[in-house]
Length: 137
Image 1 (cartoon, rainbow, N blue to C red):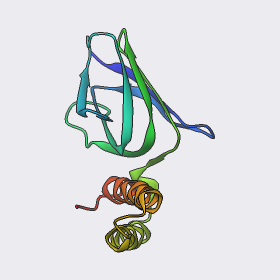
Image 2: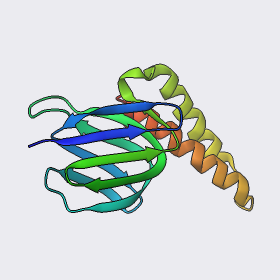
Image 3: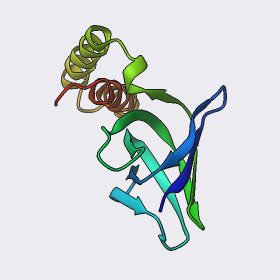
């Protein structure tokens, strides 16, 4: 059996198709969804969502920038602040952004909480995009 998966960001629908399996980056860790899953509402962290369209097919990676997911009756609706399919991300640009974000995070003064928060958020976004594009961290 399959599940219907929709990934919706403010400016576009990134995914709207059936799938065999979904892995979500929830705020409490990775969350796997299969057909028949119990109803669920969860907050999503910035990270990589993985969708397997059909058995024995490759996983599709989607970078998510935080939001919520609802699972109900074999339907998964993901509402996020931003999303981008990994196969649409330029690997070299993502690698460069990830390296720059790592450097920025390591150079933030320990007493500057706002700068630490901003650098950490930029790092999480860059890491998600890099991983979705196929990079390993």
